[in-house]
Amino acid sequence: MSAIKILAIESSCDETSAAVIIDGKIMSNIICTQAIHEKYGGVIPESASRLHIKNIMPVVLEAMEKSNTTKPELSAIAYTQSPGLIGSLLVGSCFAKSMAQALSIPTIAVNHMQAHVLSNLIESPTPNFPFLCLTVSGGHTQIVVCHSPLEQEIIGSTIDDAAGEAFDKSAKMLGLPYPGGPLIDKYAQLGNPIKFKFAEPNIKNLDYSFSGLKTSILYFLQKQKKENPQFIEENLNDLCASIQHTIIKILMKKLILASKQTNIKEVCIAGGVSANSGLRKALKENAITQSWKTYIPKFEYCTDNAAMIAITAYYKFLKNEFADLQTTASARSL
Ligand code: KG4
Ligand code: ZN
Image 1 (tube, rainbow, N blue to C red):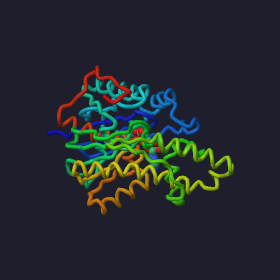
Image 2: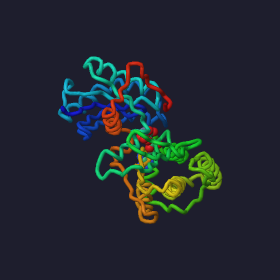
Image 3: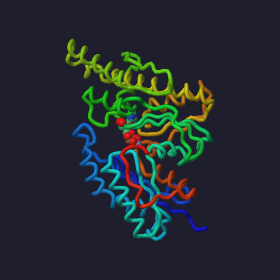
Image 4: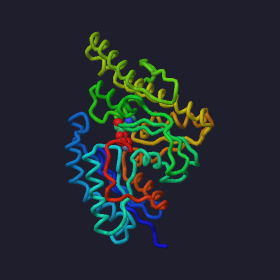
């Protein structure tokens, strides 16, 4: 049988990315991040779509070239179908469908969140099934039981803000630019994580909530700034460390509960926030205290990337799960 060669495209938010996977092995993963949003303090959907249009061709060509793959060799083209910004998704899906039509090959529609979980299958050692995955991104926070690559069960999710949002909104309150998550991570490494205490949610099941924490940080900062206008500047490292510590504590508490309830000890993290050094450290510490076997994707597979779309598409290809021309992009998870 000839090799299965898939081109995958990710364009759900502000990263234009393309990857090529050959027989389940990632051969290229090109990521072009749109820096323009930094000055607006968040992603401007219209600008994001326009930049995807500008970047998609060079990114795809580079991914093809780096993997030494020519268009006629491709078996299928995959794209992120949902969830995400609708304009951004449409750029990737229309590009993928047009190219596939021209080459007379099938397309594969991929769910972005399912793909984040499967980023843990890109490189060895890979987790054994069933495994738990804490998926923490800018728009979602989920605890997933992964029974097999394409059988994923969400057993907990956020009822309001996502973990990445909690990082980014806290950073904004501290006057840091977007996206603030990586900056909080950087300053936290120089600060005291137990200097300041913030509210933690009290939800009984496996769901998360971060809106109370956000309000607690806001009120605390307002009060402190009234007494000392330089409070943030003088305490930036300790504030970042304490905020990060609280978010990680909230995340780990439910992950530990999920492991106890399901009796699963193979535990992964995924999504943009899994790049956080404190969360990565906390997971490794719990590997010892909870007797877990833990897995963390390489940095380039944590934040949005097409390699995770490619690995998911590979498993879908093996099961003949192809999309038809009517499979449209959707802003919400289907
Ligand atoms: O998965 P992702 O790239 O995009 C979405 O699907 O949303 O996640 C982006 C999120 C942002 O909120 C960003 O601030 C956060 O991941 N993030 C981090 C770190 N790197 C990225 N948060 C905390 N620490 C980091 N090192
Ligand atoms: Zn993502």
